Image 1 (cartoon, rainbow, N blue to C red):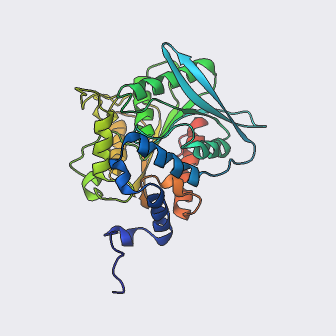
Image 2: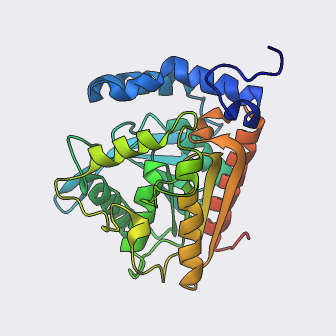
Image 3: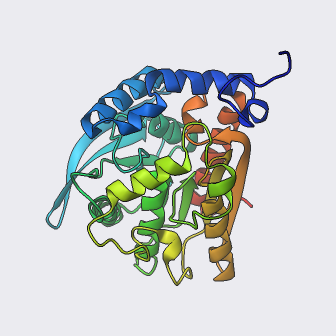
Length: 321
């Protein structure tokens, strides 16, 4: 009947516009919801093909090169992006998303290139180890090693940035290094999963949201966990920390239709309560992973522009809010 929402879209039929539904349908065509039940190697193959299908060309004058960095006993692959003809004022250490089991240097390659072009900063993308082959704290150890290496080999101030699982890593690194002489000067978290209360807020209101459900979040959390993993480990769940003082100025972007949105709000509130600077913005009528929609969905493009502006401001030692 006319006026009825399309089958399977529920309340989100009216909340999300058609351009965004076109994006969701395209994602689901490449990476169907049932993929989460497949063996991990199959999930990675499907995810990598999807990422290649959505990949955008680099902006002009952006170049990138890969290398292996060494820190202690760890060797971590990274990709460094630079904008030719412009001396950077800061560096971004970027951690990709993918539920701690998917992704790498190629999956978020174009996003990093556009961050480089939009800010003029160097970007160091980190290829941290993935679960389940490497459960926690492997990804955190790699994330920390990459930040420590970057801080120790360059005089540029560093802004931490991460998306989804990468937002968790960025926050954990910021908390672990806040008292170091070369601590980050800011952090920008993009729809991060920070280990919030899954019995309330967006976890319940948007439990069945498109592209990421509360059930998916539980799957990624469990597969990342080591035997006997403590829920109160702040390197695993940054929101479980007991001290939020001394953190760098923090900007968090979430999506309205995302179970993880409440984590951003809670993280902001904890930092403000500890006397720090933090700002949280919930992008209306968007869902998890909206960055990949930026070429076709104006609202996603506008959100990405706000993210770039926030990173650029923090890199200039400015508080944009």
